Length: 176
Image (cartoon, rainbow, N blue to C red; front, side, top):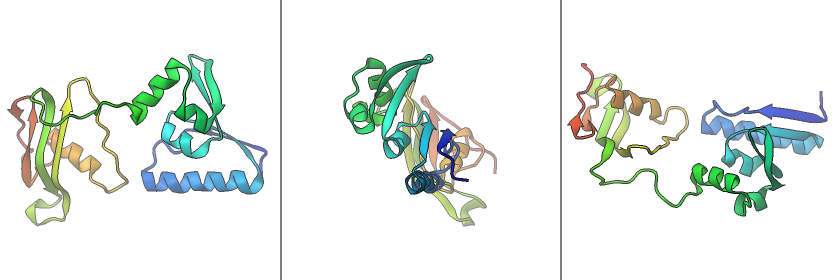
């Protein structure tokens, strides 16, 4: 129907990375091919960097900063915008330190399958540490093992190798 304006409100939030890329490419194609204007509402600055010509940063219903995408992402003027960018991966400090005895959760050399030791390997030799008050994102497309790792950590799936610790206490795996 070739509208003059499209409004997208978080259209790729629940999609895995591969599907998200395809959807974003389709949106870009429609906007360019039909010279359609688009408003892309999102919290995802990685998507913004790919999609937007301009960015408007809002906070509490007020415009904080506005500018050309590249300029705003590389040289944000306002403190709030700078903080948003720091949270989204431009921060200098690592979110997950290794070798720190104060780790809240530690996963050591975890491997897992579905179907016991004879099943297909879903996770292989995974190591992870998370300190109290920090966030670690586990990112990957569908089938990459994110949910399987969560199941092992929570004890819902026994690993075929490796251990999980909460503080200094080893967590028992689920009963097979």
